[in-house]
Length: 246
Image (cartoon, rainbow, N blue to C red; front, top):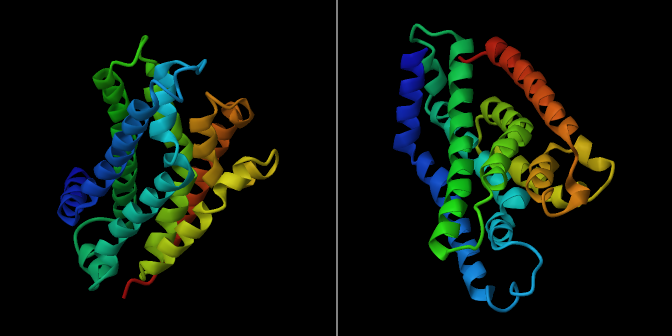
């Protein structure tokens, strides 16, 4: 299993997926820090929020609503495409590995990429606050803790895109569906009832809950996220094991 994970990680590095996982959040951090510095002494001067909270909001604003689900969609689609083209599955399964091991290895790599993406965003925001000299103590619970919770909240999205990407050989299908699912998420997140049925709202409520009380759904949402992840991945694994790869 370790050798399989190492081989999958090497494929991922060669395909450039790490750059996608790293550069997108860095772009958001640079943009957020720029906005913070630009309006620090004008628009934000009279705010009751701390400078760290303002910086957090500027860096995170676009991430959960659109960019995070799109990054997950693209990364997992590319991860699956390595085997979906040129008979890659047939070649991979000729090695002494089971389909279950292949499935789990791919899932671990997918989760590592998403974690890397979120870690760069959280760590970059923290570094941005230090560089700009944001006043007060850095809120590690907000900057790092929310990133960890966001990963849990994103588990159903990872699962759905994983199953779609490994089920359909044409990369356009999971990409189109991923974009389509992400687009209305912000509207569903503002609904008192619809959010629970739409996993794309979970990261939005996670990131916005500290500043907007209506988005705070409590621990229930994270329990639902983990449950959905287990159910969807179990279904996907069963389908993957029974699929004809010839």
